Length: 247
Ligand SMILES: Cc1cc2nc3c(=O)[nH]c(=O)nc-3n(C[C@H](O)[C@H](O)[C@H](O)COP(=O)(O)O)c2cc1C
Figure (tube, rainbow, N blue to C red):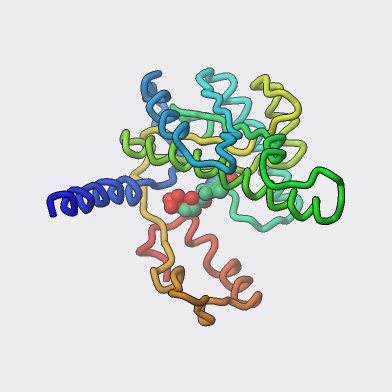
């Protein structure tokens, strides 16, 4: 009975952190993150589950303001390129990267896909297993990164998960700045710190929209038209507005 009470209290404490995790894209630059906080945050990342327990991640803490500025410059430029390409994605202001008191670059080692079920014979079947191996690897790195985001939230910071760096050109720009070996990949950048403006809770799907019991609820199977309509009418709102301002 006592244990039941403790588990519920523990769940509530966890959910407090889960609910408090919010994205901010502009930070109070006056804050200095103590070295201990980086270690507490990455201690959470270290305990994450991963396919074959391969732990295919590495974290680079970026403390130098010049490096942060160079990274921000790259993103601002990339944002201009996207605008020229008429990608229509509601791109945020990446200048905010420069102001992030905490910055951790997430590096993945895709060679670890060899540790997952693959045939290694170049066959079509092997390719299918390799595709799945990449998913396993990305899910593993995301699990670890998410643990870090929650730990930073527990320490009172707001967070920013930046993934706009998968393309070859972005990799080529980022790796020399951080001394990342060529055969590794920079998968995302984790920024955190006190927010420059009050943070806000973004819209989340309801439980009914994300949960089915026993069989997939056909009502939740959206058509391509419905998805496109959501992108057109809702995406910009759910990304940049308070949940109460999304209809
Ligand atoms: C896998 C992943 C990739 C993301 N990539 C970016 C990104 O490249 N740039 C950005 O500004 N935000 C990025 N975000 C942040 C999302 O836009 C944000 O989590 C979402 O709008 C929900 O807001 P919330 O984090 O406050 O709940 C990413 C988040 C995740 C989990």
